[in-house]
Length: 497
Ligand code: NAD
Image (tube, rainbow, N blue to C red; front, side, top):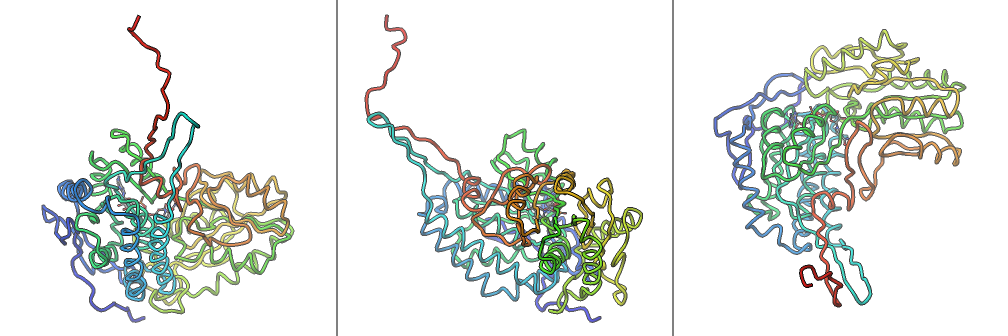
C-alpha cells in the first residue's frame, strides 16, 4: 500500500503564545508519529511550566486589558462567523491533515471539520440571542443577572477527533469572552496549530488564543495547577479526569469533565432490525471505534439474538479496513502504537471472555500500521473485562437478555454512564427505559445524531457537568446577581438603643 503524505507538512510544531509561534523556553521537544508508518514525521515543542507561565500571562493580559472580553456580543459573533467560514473553506485540507495525524478515515475527518465550523457558528448565534434573568419584587426590588466571562480558560483535549473537540471548547469559551490556553493531545498535535492562523485572520486579538503543546503530566499538569487559570475544561480518560479533579482542588477551580464511556445499545425484539444493525455497526466502528459515545456493548433480546449476531458479524467482517486517506475506507489505523497495543490486548482478553464472531486481530494484507479488524464477541458475560472496560477501538461485546428488567440491569451494570441507544417500536417501553438508564444522553432508534442545543455530558464515571447550548456559556461565565433596592428596606438598627 502506498503511504499518502499530505503536501506541506511541517517538520516542527510550535507553541502559539501572545500572537507568536514559539519553541519551548528550554528547547524541549517530543516526537510525533503518523499511525500508518509509525515513523516520526515532526517534532513538537514540549511545553513545561515556563511555557505555560508565558501562555497564561499572555491570556491574562488579554483578559484584563484587551478588547475581547469587552466587545459587544455581536462584534464577537462576527469574528466567530469568520472563523466558521475559514474552517469551512479549508475543510478538505483540515481533513487530510487530521487523517494523516490520527488515522481517521478521510470521509469521517471531513465530517468532523464541518462540525468544527458549525460549533463556531452555533455559539456565535447563541451569544447574540443570549438573554439573562431579571426578577421583580413589586415595589421593593429588581434583581438581574450580570453575566461575566470567568477569565483565562484552560482547555485540555484528547486525540480521537482533535480539531473538532478543540472547537467544542474554543467556540463557547471565546464566545463568552474568555481568553484561553489550549493544551492539545500529544499523540495528535498537527491540526491545532491551524487555529492560530485561522483566529488571527478572523480578527481574534493577540493573547486571546494561546496554544501550548506537550505531554499531559508536564504541560497539562502545569496548566491545571496554574493559579491564574480559574477554570479547566477537560475531555479525556476517566483516570486522568480524577487526577485533574484532585489537582484543581487546591485552587477550587471550575471544572467540566467529559470522560470515558461504555455505552449500551439495547435492541428489543420489536425493533426495526435492519436499521438497528446499520446503526449499531456505525455506532461502534465509526471513528475507528475511538469514540467516547461508541455503542460498544450491544444487548439483544434473546428471541432475536442468534439472528442479530449472525447478521451483525457478517457485516462487521465486510467492513473496509485500510488506508485512512482512501475515501472507500470505513475503518482506518488506530492513532498510535501504544493505543494499538492496548486495543490488541483487549482483543486477546476477549477470546477467553466471549465467542469470537468476526475480526480478532490484524487484517490480512496490512502488515504495517495500527490496523485492527472490526472485532465482534458474542455471549459476553456482564462480569467480563470487555463488557466493563472502555477499549476505545473497533471491538464490540454482544450479550443476550430475557426481560426489560434484565436489559436495564445489564445496561446500568458498569461504572460509566455516557450514552445509551434504545431500539424498540414500543413507545411506552422506549420512554420508560430512557428515563431509567444511567446515561447522560439517550437516543431512541438512532445512533449519535446531536442537536447542538442539547446538553452534552455523562453521569457516573463518564463526567461531571454538562456542556452544550447555553450550558457551555454558563460554564465559561459567572452569573453575578445584582440587587436593586426600590423602597426603604427594613433594617434592624443594631447599636441604636
Ligand atoms: P487522556 O486522558 O490520556 O488525555 C487527554 C488529555 O489530557 C491530553 O491532552 C493529555 O495530554 C492530557 N493529560 C494527561 N494527563 C494529564 C494530567 N495529569 N494533567 C493534565 N492533563 C493531562 O485521554 P486520551 O487517551 O487522549 O483520550 C481518550 C479518552 O477520552 C477516552 O477515555 C474517551 O472516552 C475520552 N473522550 C471523552 C469524550 C466525552 O465527551 N465524554 C470525548 C472524546 C474522548
